[in-house]
Image 1 (tube, rainbow, N blue to C red):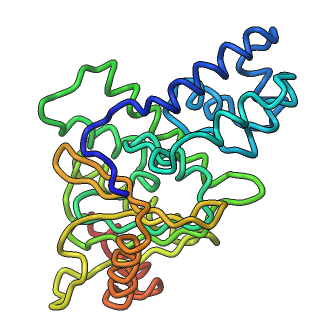
Image 2 (image 1 turned 180 degrees about the horizontal axis):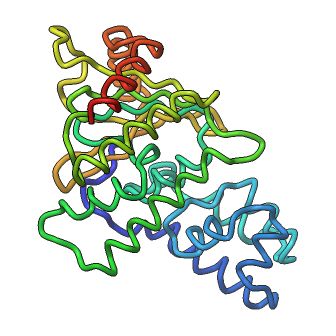
Length: 274
């Protein structure tokens, strides 16, 4: 299934989300209290109630037990059409990202969001055309930095691989000081036990990713998804055939890029020059 290029409401999940909110309030529980009882993040519950995140059947069963709703939510989830199981816009990718078992990311224009410093991320948002308001920029920055909590996830973060074009590391987004700090941050990230970081040399003659950036992830249920972005469009893909093609591309990119050790050496050199 290919996600729509325009955000749209998924009727089933919005109805179920509204139902969750109504049943929670009827039980006299706040979002933080119910999230605590279910051992999930409050943000996860909020996304479910807003219809931005699918309610998994196993979690629906737990909710029915906590809220004493006699299987109402589980029955509703079971009746959601298969084609609607993965809502189709960027927020859903971010939700899946936070639960991912593995995460493979190729980027050719900017440093991947999960690896951006606060100053670099703020500079990226300042480049948007048309410009966004200061309040919206602050909101987006806060949301991006909040995603970095993935590195501190318990029992542990996903196994992550990042492939970055060398040209990204020369573009002084935010100015030379911001770039230098970003390069040093990348070097520290490369030492993280769950992270593999490789740089694609600009001089490489063979390149498997000329069609643009992509993110591949594996969910806790071992489903494989892909997320791709272009100019004002985004797609969340769960079609196994399409995901397989992108996985092949990513595998080839890994073989064409510098090794992790060579990449760390290049980052050391660039950070000294910046």
